[in-house]
Length: 350
Image (cartoon, rainbow, N blue to C red; front, side, top):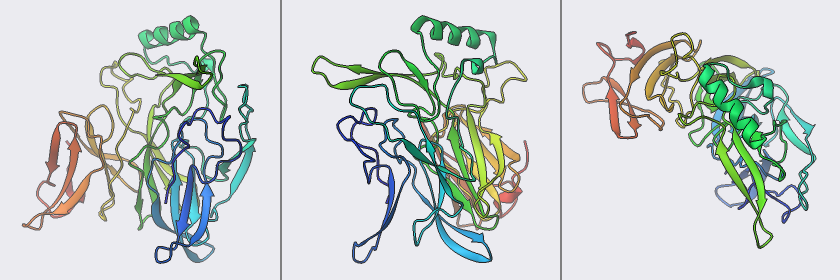
């Protein structure tokens, strides 16, 4: 069972400590309800990195053994692969020191867990030499905003300040979102889309002395992020080693000049992995629906929708025996059948 963040997830001065079981994966015996184990992904959570992604059951082959496992990831973009019998990390976890909070009454937890092998699947920090230069207009907009409001950069796990706004990564829509990932059991790959999206945030105290916050997407009016691309990824992690098998940009900014469109885009949809070795995914705000080779990450097929498919595709077999894949777009359902075959693998390139 994945547990979410505390009720107010930007300030924790009224809830000192690690705040177990917030932001935790908890296992219980389904028959008796008896607690079995837990793993806390974020301690004393103050970044809105709640456990929105459903955990994924999988199998890890290591040291000649097949280990029943589970993949857990939050908006922090850190992927933990755990033994689902014991709750122990299979590829190791390191407790890393993190910055203290400058806010009165706040006691940020001094360390946070990070996977020892699998790198972060989205951006975790920002410096001013990383402002987007993909177009002159975007660069000028972002520099003017930083100068006008005296925005400050951020380090990994840095608490939100109160004196001036901070550019924080991942923001509340960064990292992994609600759709989660998928598992290809033949390859041993866990595949997931993640966002490198930042928020501009600042803690603000109201007249009653309670802390609130201001927030804005670190992006222009067209939702083009202000840091250098890529802004969205599709990543395959080899669960047997914990290492990245492949990673590609997911999504294009079609309004950008030719040669600058491969930016990746914000995504809220998950992948579907049928047994044919394909990964189907919509999700991105560019309204493209895509199929990738699950082994290599190569784009095999894409189709432009009328609306963005902020959903996870489904696959099914019709009465004729033909297999279909369906995805819910914002304005309806689009269904595609493979041309001239019984398997999804026969999709032809456009």
